[in-house]
Amino acid sequence: MRVVFSIFIFLSGIFGADITGYYILPKNEHGLESVVRVFEKDNKYYAYGFTSKDNADFGYDVKNPNKELQKRRVKGSVFVWNLQKKSEDKYVGGKVYNYVNGKTYYAKAEVKGDDLVIRASSDSVGMFGKTIVWKKLSKEEVEPYLSRDVDLKIVEETIPQD
View 1 (cartoon, helix red, strand yellow):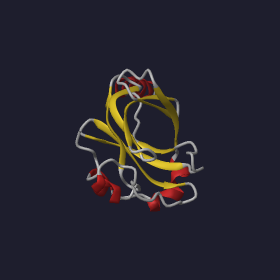
View 2 (cartoon, rainbow, N blue to C red; view 1 turned 90 degrees about the horizontal axis):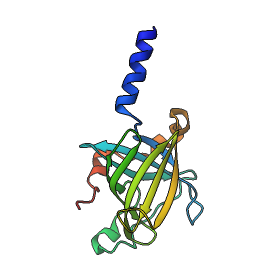
View 3 (tube, rainbow, N blue to C red; view 1 turned 45 degrees about the vertical axis):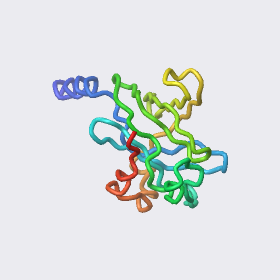
């Protein structure tokens, strides 16, 4: 039994913290707490929102500078993309899109316990920006929201190509 436990601890150190899963975001300027999913594709990490605690309608991406994208629904659209694992608990090289103002920022992330700390900034160094803490949801906590999730194949079609 001690050998199995030792192997588990060793493998946890090799593979590090996994950021995939479901998170609840802090209340936004409209008082909504969004539920988002982080997924991995081709060794990069992405996030999209699909509901809020009170099941509010996210509406359309009306602030997007691309006129065609102003017609897309926010629900199920990727808003964090291209995060790449740098170390056991750090992710870099990503971008984050803000639906409120239609702007895209550099993004990096760090796992701290059950939290994913996202740093969005206007420069790639991260000097000027905003930090937001996402709380990872347990299986029990996410269960009430899963029926509102979006098919991942549809979500993947919204990954920005930059």
